[in-house]
Image (cartoon, rainbow, N blue to C red; front, side, top):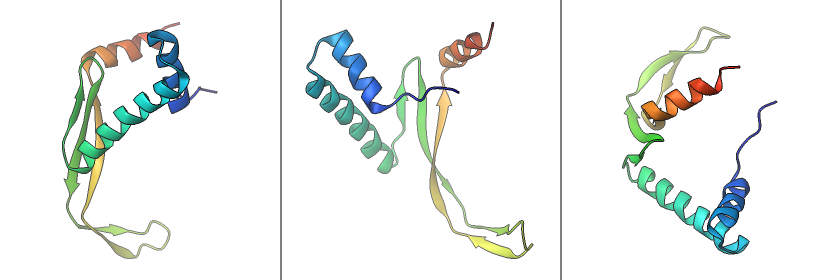
Length: 99
C-alpha cells in the first residue's frame, strides 16, 4: 500500500533539514500551506517551479443525470481546483515507475 505524505512528515523533514525546532517547523509548514490556500481561495494560481501549478477554474452550470434513476439533475456553477505538474515532476514520477 502506498504511503501518504502528511503535514507532520513535512514538518519533520523541515526539522531535520533546516534545523528548526519541531514546533517552529510545524508552524512554518502551516504558514506556507495557509498562504497557498488563501491565494487559491482568492482565485489566484500558485506556481511552484519544478513542481507544478495549482489553478482555480470556474465551471458553468449544466444539467447532469443521476446514473441510478436516469433523472436529470441541475449541477450548479462552481469553482474547482486543478493541478498541472511541471515537466520535471512528470519525468520524475515516470522514472519512479521503472523497476
